[in-house]
Image (cartoon, rainbow, N blue to C red; front, side):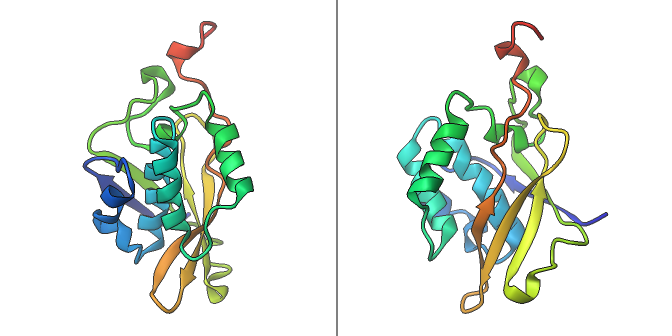
Length: 168
């Protein structure tokens, strides 16, 4: 099995300044950093540039590549609900409207720390529109003890919200 951590946000950051003001922005645990990734992705549909700034912050010393930016654009086009699906209470039936406060559950498993010696950890987040949890790999910066986004696989397709699917 594994451990679970619930990360709670009273509101979602709309820009980098708001994100940096959050206690999770210390990124002193990989769980907080993983939850912040989803929070940043939620801003993308309404403010792409602000979301990219937040994701660059979460990437630490290695900013987003042109490929990363194109990947985000491709995966989030027409799917503003996708990142919201990771929050408690969001379901296809309610159009992926999350409960407030916003809560994300981050899990590990016995294999999550297989690369810990090299400074990596792989954690999992569950989308209510997917059958299996999605991985996020984080990398620790030993000089600061902070955890940064290394790679995420959160943006695979999920079941569309019922309101968007006339055949549901």
